[in-house]
Length: 290
Image 1 (tube, rainbow, N blue to C red):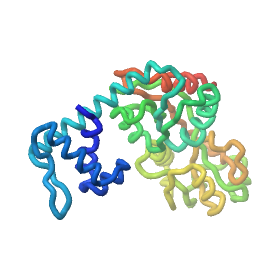
Image 2 (image 1 turned 180 degrees about the vertical axis):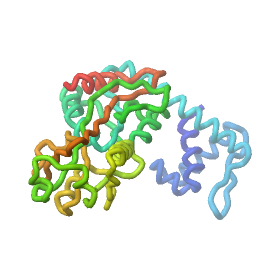
Image 3 (image 1 turned 180 degrees about the horizontal axis):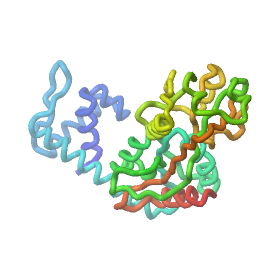
Image 4 (image 1 turned 135 degrees about the horizontal axis):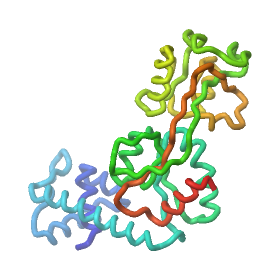
């Protein structure tokens, strides 16, 4: 079976029209039409019905579509297994993490890794811990950096770093003039928060509420540089990783009496299945802090 024909058929089904599928595959519409006709001849059945609204699957076509997707997935798995044996001459590391990981933990590790293995590429995703963990479970990412604890027993967690979450303000904020502030000083302050529902936001909100303070979140952002910029320009406060404060000119850390927020970050992968050679080598650099 020619997998190019299978791929072309699936592209037509998922695009809903020959023209869009042809653009997606980078071929002419007539060439794609011939591929579909050849695929139908090979299988001995009509797979698509064509009308004014585009193309629709026949009953046989529905079977061909589902089985075709499985064939292509199996082919991709085969290529991935072969890639495992190519060493570090080529390959790709698929990794994701939250804002702190993507902004401050991964960049120096990736730079060091690519100095050693310049032909290895990186696919990097920034998202909350829950989404990253789900992507690792599904095999869309090989590695993830997430906030512990994990909810799935199908993931393996390797401790990475204990991350202190600190309160920051712009340098000329009235609270910045004090050596230490009290929790009661925060009741009337506005905050720039991480997106609701993220593991870090929940950690911060819970710590504040346990201390008897309900944070007044004036805006929500994902990017740490954007949060720090907002703190510097609006005068609001924010909680961020202490890792973000290196070389910071606009904001300063505020010492809060009786308040300590810390989280543990870990590198995760699936319990079953092997990492690619590139991902495994990068994992070693991450864990050594090399």
